[in-house]
Image 1 (spheres, rainbow, N blue to C red):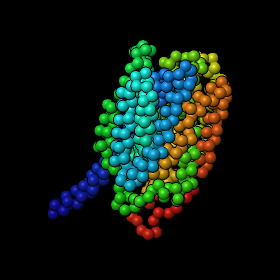
Image 2 (image 1 turned 45 degrees about the vertical axis):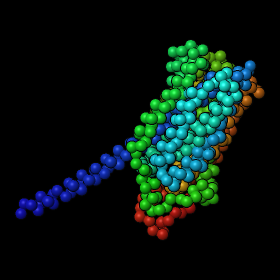
Image 3 (image 1 turned 30 degrees about the horizontal axis):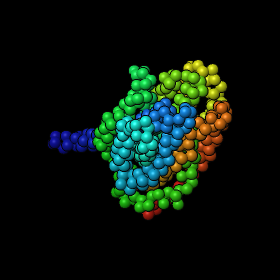
Image 4 (image 1 turned 180 degrees about the horizontal axis):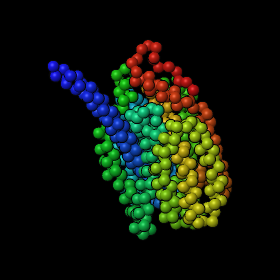
Length: 466
């Protein structure tokens, strides 16, 4: 008589334990995905950022020798642009593969590609040793870097956001957005440390190479983290229902043109703002304000360190307020701030420079933190990797790719900060147009919920709503 009650009592506890175990496993998967997205993207952006800083500081002399320092810098920034021009190739190739074969496999491939390219740059002889072959090889390796980054971002966003609650997409997707400031912080920190420990001649001779060679160690760490991950639940559901697209690129262009346009345009302003206050500001501070290289790097380091913490907060904020409204207000602030920054730094003092860069990068956080979620939710789940990658990389062509080049050209032609500020204001206005065209986050949440539910003909893929 006592056995039955005992048996009845055990069953509920067993069900509860199983539920708790399932919940704990899910939370653990979300945490691992968030960390993998953040660290992997940070490592890839370390590679990308160390090149950007080196282009501003030493590549002009080493690979593009010229009697005019500004001309050498202009040519160095041309190779910087190559990294953006090659991104669409990565977006086309890896974006398509991410929707067809899975997120995880593609993210491992992109990490290897950019890591190998960066390591080889650290071994590359300069112009004085092998002549014109040096800048040619540099361009080829920079091209490979861009292809890797072009395929990385869309997958990193989906890796964290598709494991997490779609209603908190802003926070989870921001893991990938922490990558650029974290990578930038690490890259500039390494370069600053090398600059402090070495003489000018030592740094220009071989010191800068150390930062590139470190990429081999960092990429190995990133691969170890990503190899332990499972595929995202969203992609698993697509596999189970056999709903993976056969021609995702064509589908994005033919069925979701408004989504693609909105996602492309929203990126232009933040890209230009970031290029100004993390890349070109190094040239502006050293050549126009007569500051030391270390002082300029320190200002960027402070701003980047704050961004690491503010980026996920901005993403989380966009989950609780209207994401498009937050983005729009921040774009307006980005347009206005340069007209304050340049006059306040005209005296050449370090404190106004550091404060100005910090404010600019805080504004950038309010744009870039929610941006990953905003772009991803423009596209249906089955086309999300392709659509996000295409938007990210195509936007780079009219945003970050040409920004340092245009900044340098405008400053050289007009010898004034006003054209630089007007350029940033125009880019921010373009982002406002993109935000206006974008759709409500709830539509994307509903699609994710629909994908997780059992499919019937009535719940088949519907056109995107705005």
